[in-house]
Length: 312
Image (cartoon, rainbow, N blue to C red; front, top):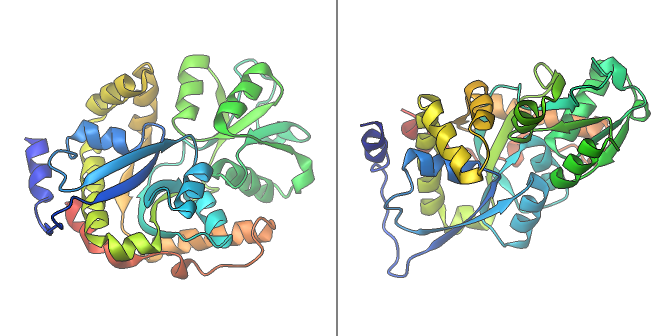
């Protein structure tokens, strides 16, 4: 019944396609948009082709988008800011809101580190410009520390995992599903989360030429993603089971992640713009970006109605 209601919600605003079926090239991160859309059953009868490409983190996804290899994708607010400041052709077209427990600094189960204060002089792995990097900077700022008070090892998630497991770094600042994977399977501990430190914001982003040339496809995709996320809030067990099978990971991992994340799609509104401006300002203060951007200029609010209707 729920899937039928979702399918009905997607009927409004239908569009005509040219005789030759179009393709929307979509970038995704591990077990994210594609997994929830498949679980919710909203990928049936899509009137265009979706070409999925999965990336281990936002940085390579944004590189692919900048190069024109994909047209839209899911990224965190921090790497989006990094890309926009570098001049990448990218705009945020929808926001992803969730609780903030899933962005955290982890330490191994037997580590003597018990609080952020214990990290002074220690080595933390994360991705340059990632939301993990953002969390470290926000925590340093809150504690009145300087950049030299910790050592940051900039590593991709796969390399960070190896370094963390082998003990060549003391902690790992990372995001979901990596946080739940470490907590559930390896008993890692979160010494801080991003609660009270960062907005916990992600974006569906798109190239400006895709917004211009494939607006109908992007609008339809956003509607389906919004509907899928709305479904997932009330079907955590079903979604976790599907996600676990797709990723070949024990279901306890996605159950841990999804039961606390409460992920939903939100329109680009004044609150989202203000939160993004906060991320821009943080990165500018720490010298990660050289120019202070205006958040309102790197977002596109024109998809807000489609999101609001699909989220009903």
